Amino acid sequence: MLIDLHTHSSVSDGTESPAELLATARAAGLDVIALTDHDTTAGWSMAEAARPSGLTVVPGMELSCRWFLDDQPPISVHLLAYLFDPDHPGFAAERARLRDERLERAERIVTSLAAAGYPVVWRRIVERSDGGVVGRPHIAGALVDVGAADSVDHAFATLLHHRSPYYVAKADTDVREGIALVRAAGGVPVFAHGLATKRGRVVGDDAIAAMAEAGLLGLEVDHPDHSVAERDHLRGVAADLGLITTGSSDYHGTNKATPIAACTTEPDQFEAILAAGTGSAPFGD
Ligand code: AMP
Ligand code: FE
Ligand code: FE
Ligand code: ZN
Image (tube, rainbow, N blue to C red; front, side):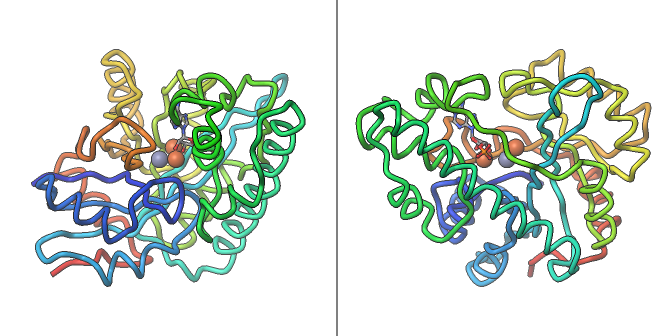
């Protein structure tokens, strides 16, 4: 059983449509894939319709959240959510707020890049996102198009990283509130790439314990952005707190170098997620 529980389609900031993503998953020999676009469930019906036989598709999402500190700016944390009810009103409203927030904030980044002389145009970013959820990778793509960066990675390294003068934070969901919403919608919340230091500041073990107290059910341990030591540490934290552990690629098509199935989840941990998720069912044979 090959199981990859974290992937993105062009419905958010991946480069393959849900149908293309599932074909990639099948070609890579995966048996189970979760579709976890940022802050939207718009790809679920497309994935259900395009599912190749023999592949199980877990409906999921990656919710943009924050961990608040007393004396410093909040830390960005990503919360994977599986098998929740997409029609739960409170959760649906929060996702809609986040998508609006993303639009406003991306436009502010583009305006400030344009003011500094980078020839990026907001309308082009909207076109690139094709009605989906807008993120920095769309701005990165536009910067590559106009020759201001060599690649999406290069655009992040030079202009779009979280310490860049052009960076604008967004008002993401308080992670404890996010966890409560996922659970209220019958879903399974899993803390994504919790120790990925290259993305920015990361939370401490105290925050993970508080998240578990708030209803968190799992930790993404094996992730391309985690070192061996970070994985070992998270595995220990999960054991201490009685949390599920997952491994996933965080595949984004050609927006990232990581191939699909670069990290995978153990079948018994997947079974635990299936047992805990009551808001929706996997798409399968
Ligand atoms: P946003 O959600 O708009 O804050 O953008 C964050 C997204 O940018 C992440 O979900 C990744 O898909 C992508 N990303 C972050 N860092 C990099 C990087 N160094 N290279 C390529 N993509 C990245
Ligand atoms: Fe992304
Ligand atoms: Fe993420
Ligand atoms: Zn992701």
